[in-house]
Image (cartoon, rainbow, N blue to C red; front, top):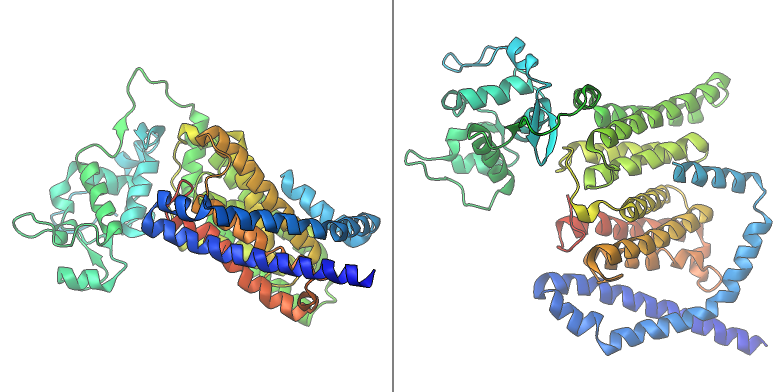
Length: 489
């Protein structure tokens, strides 16, 4: 009997070694696909007999782990009524339910006139919206700010439209790289539209070398030619006043800025009180109210975004970051032990959404994305990512199990959506592959009986920190380093 048990142990360990080999092969395959093309990767790796054989052997070896899993599930249900399990279950249930002065020769549209046109309905990015939205996006793209030297976004956009010859010499295009200033021969971090062209009208930068600059100059050209947005035709039904007011409100409030600052301040206060004044009883009641208010504030912003865009806000990187932050804030409301890490995750995620190279503008969805399977897939995946981020601070087996279950569920929901969208459940797209890699990598700490190295909390802590790199690769790397059907920004 003992020898049979040892054989099972050897089979399980060999299976885990095989899964590790598959992780390496799949990671290399995504890079090979980027360099040699998708057909080459499918022919030589994904559809090769040896790759399919390795998967078959690994899945067959996984059957030896079933008895341990069944015992673990039995023990878990046995202790489910405990306080910890009740709290963990409550968290998961809650989540799932869940100025006119410029240069002397620069003419500017008066504020009164610009403000009167802010709610005028226009067609922008394929949807109807108030003029305030394209004007705000235009100014944010150029300067990184929602106002410019006391001028509103509407004043700047309308002034560019009416007086382009005046504004082409205004230094308002913010340069992120010093080498661009050197190439243009200018001082400072801001350039004018005219700085990018010589006297003959030739572009002074290598085309395509600085895509962010190219995009901003293109926006100026589109605006001055009247093609960035267009008036709403008479035959097109206009939006209701409530939709327009909602979008103006959404544009006026710096939601993510307020929230990431508040989340970090709250995390600091929690740490300070827990460390130096744990006896403050009034704080125990007030802190949950504050955390719930932060979650409600973000939920309201997502609700308004949903209302004005007419689709669930999970269609791009900016929106999914907000979903991760909302998940973390909800977790902070229901747990005392993990509230500081949850607030740090929320604040960091909102900070990335705020200062990263992301586009927060609201756009319409293409038909392929108008599916309830997509919404459930992305939401489930984002919740699992938030739980994985929480594990960076403290190993927690219950949280890891939920994160793995949600990630696996999200992958299944995504495959169903892929079938309806592209006609196939699985196509070894880089993001699909890296999601599978993440699922496998996080599987190891759950098998302490087979892999005793993970019985050490210190070992688990460092492994989970390294393992989170696979989540970052899945979420960011596949968007910005690799190309595929799931790449979006």
